[in-house]
Image 1 (cartoon, rainbow, N blue to C red):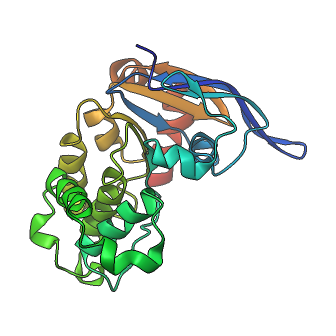
Image 2 (cartoon, one colour):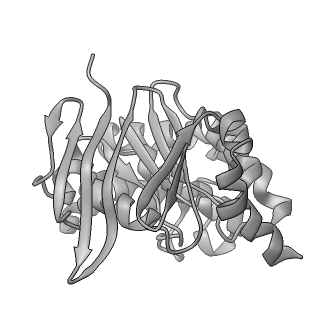
Length: 252
């Protein structure tokens, strides 16, 4: 079986500025891979290229053996290559269930003017219930987003992606902005995700990274510095100096 996602020689230039240089990595089915690095390393730029929000200057992206380098962002999403964002993107006045319902309708390419009719279809509601169940959100289904704690809102955004039945999920700082008192909510949620789902996540919370990542990719100045297991990365002196060292000095 081919890898779920393969990136080969990916580069991105903005004029004379190279923000991504010769990035190559792969995700197997069921992968749990963390992408870490200091601010400005190019992590979100890489995610944007993988999802099609940003065109690479050169290189190739393959999804289950298919070259998707020139495929649109919408088509990638319809085929199960989905992401979350650093900042929650939900409709605050709507309920949790209605936010997920909208995500399902959008992912299926159904015109929004038919929302009321389509929302009653059993297939749509089944997808909503499935996404709620994955993250234990059923008790919050009828609550408006604006009534939820921030950690709960992050879970809803994850549910929006899961409603699209992803095969590869890219999580852009799932714990960003979540108070430490609520971070366990995110940890439990990631731990419950389907085992056959390939996940690449950007995260600055090292507790979360070392708890869930099976492989860690360290990105520095737009290039991959090293790839390894959590044990290998935590013992790497270059990582301690470039990433962990900076973090410790910042907190000193």
